[in-house]
Image (cartoon, rainbow, N blue to C red; front, side):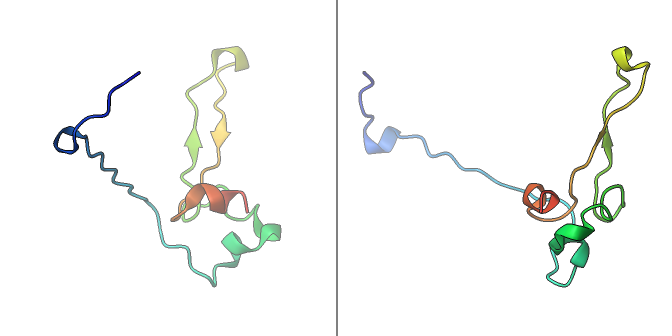
Length: 79
């Protein structure tokens, strides 16, 4: 069992969260309309267009990874 440290010896952790990309505008139908999900994928304004390194077991092909390019991105890319 770990003893509780006195208040003057407690660690204070701080976390800085940075988000890259553009703001999520309410009028942007490509982000807010689930039926338009295919439009932002691959678009340089909406997608980071990540690709894997060439995969040796796939004849050197790269795998595309769609990642949203706006604030709150993971939630936006899944609708």
